[in-house]
Length: 317
Image 1 (tube, rainbow, N blue to C red):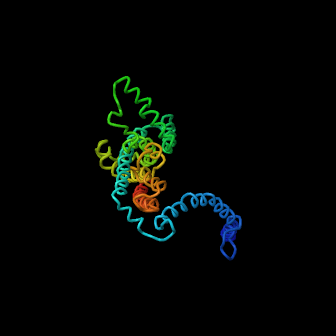
Image 2 (image 1 turned 90 degrees about the vertical axis):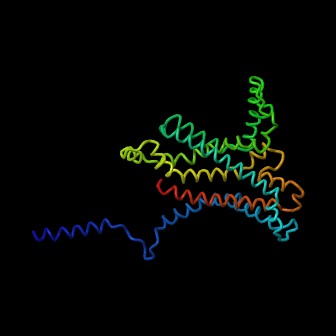
Image 3 (image 1 turned 180 degrees about the vertical axis):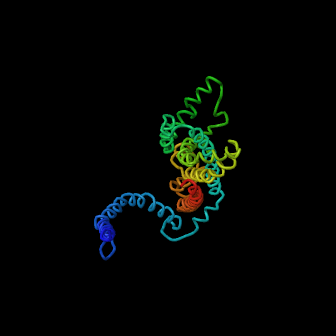
């Protein structure tokens, strides 16, 4: 019996030694194949890094830097004083007002769409079609979107003529508003609402059924669940989505440039005018100063978005 009991621990130690993983070298580094795989993975990021450098970082640096130099290359800060010009302040106010309005409407309507989709199966036909359509429509803009609205709601658009001939309703009795600042509201909502569906649906889907069950067990109602649990929990995600929609509308250019071709009612169009005009407000390189102002506004909004999104991600994880 003694020989058997002493042989068992020895066999156990021998088995554990056989099963122990092989140690790295004296340097403690990972094996060469692992280092090569990490190196190849890093190389795969080179095209994306080059894309960011050429089409995001470098244009941003050039756009901002031109605001601090004259046409002759001399350093100056006089261009920044143009940001306080009443005309420039009005364009920033127009851009901010348009962005707040379309972001608010888009956030509310998009949240209602998400709530309607919540009771549908994620793999169902309706949910799949709406998810796919939201992904496409959220990226629709520019000349194509402007043409769609001109062909539909323009001065001779299909819907305009139909309402005028069939019901005697003249959409442009007060003037061609579609080619002015109010005419940008509907095209912006065209891509704001789908963007809200994309960004807010994951947060709404993350609501746990156990919370509703606990609310009912404690004698609560559906209204009390949303007032005391659902809305407070979803508020950070909703605010983060609203900030994202604001930044998206504030920085949009192509749709406004194609639709509102006359005038410079918003900041992106004011930058276009500064680049194409000989002088704007008596200052050179005004476009760089305007671009700096836009970058500051969008940077602050996205910083707030990251803070709110970080708070919203606590209960989603």
